[in-house]
Length: 165
DNA sequence: GCCAACGTTGGC
DNA sequence: GCCAACGTTGGC
Image (tube, rainbow, N blue to C red):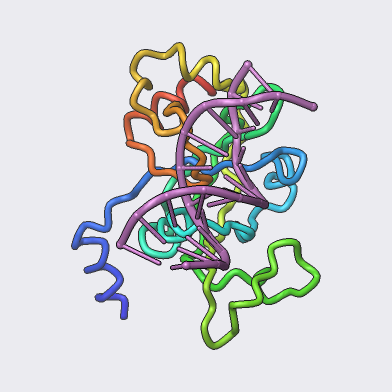
């Protein structure tokens, strides 16, 4: 078992980088700091789900983005702490994101668990992201980009981290 | 499989 | 609150 895990790493499951959006009124970086970790439930978009389900591994690093906020921007850092599992809210009739088409036998929605890493000393606003030349390729800056889970490059992650620290 | 209608996202 | 952009739904 240990050998298999090690070989998984040796086979190059390279760490990946992500940007995840949350509306701070619903769940902010402060909430995550308080909770230490949380299951990223409620995503009901297949592309975003697929990133979580297929591509995210424990240890991947996350830019925690506040959307629909004043101002919008990256508020801090998080990390994937558990691989994707079925999103429990899809089975919960009382949940706003309940999905009648999902069953425990055939779940539709998956989410990863993320853990708090840091709140930025300097909030990196969307405006700042736009003004930073080396970040011009960032997905979140593209017009009409609504995906709540987006891949980022290591260079983008490092740059935003530097701006925020 | 097309596409119009509708709902949602999210910056402004 | 507006509205552009996008995803989903459902009639055909």
